Length: 406
Image (cartoon, rainbow, N blue to C red):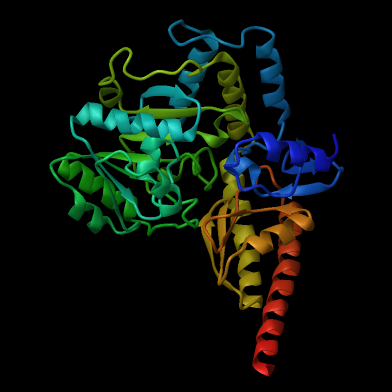
């Protein structure tokens, strides 16, 4: 099939729930992807943060091929050696004190499990979430998500959720009642605009939750596994939650999520109260084991810290050069560049020039490249952005001049 045929068939037969970009990808390697016509792109979308070790990392590919020949599926009502090895490995990585794991299939599912777990352990119903938060689009996760465009078509949602300003711990404390089971927060908001709170914020939340006997849930679906320059973003603040939600980069591109918790919290769930057919399959566990080995052996968190700092310096230079840019923010290789207008046209212009980037809300360009990206490829991205921003600023200046002359 050619490009036009692929686009037409997907548009005709696939549910129209994704905002499509005009690219048909057919191949990926490391931080690069190629479309159906052979055009190369530097990928700063990375499957929305999934491709932490890059596309088709050889060690992940090898692990998947090996496991496919042995055993693909094993329901968690039976034991499995690969799953066991994965559980041991993941518990060596997560913050100390989190020692029970529920494998799931996605980030949204990890949040759903965390909500149920908080209610089950505390016997209370309510959850405090943050303005600007994104936790997924399944019904429970959507109740914790902030954006009206996602929420309003499906009202009423799960009752008991309240949203308070992100970054203001005192607002969390004010919102706690005798019905509050948990506080859920992204250490850095992704979809909400790559918002980084002040350094003491997570510590303040931990203290409030301890004082008020409320569970603290960290949604590290996007920030986890080295993305921010630490293995988990909560390590920047040296804070351990009661429950942590993980997914995206965990299995090298295969669908896997985790809900990790303190043993006494996780043990409140009884047999049959939460499960899934595909939870912890040998195939995704094998991919996850290989991915974790790559993250550790190639020191990808450290790489993200160093290259992220370089990337942000270069973006700051562009911000200083063009009046259309407002702010650069982020940690590691989770970066946002805020503009003074809708960025959709700029995203399309970047794609035309061989760079794939994301939005984060209406006016923020978001960068979630594979952590294996190198400095030369970052320079390519910056060079394209320079051209796009120059063109955009000139167009706006020209339009303003024409309007004044009229």
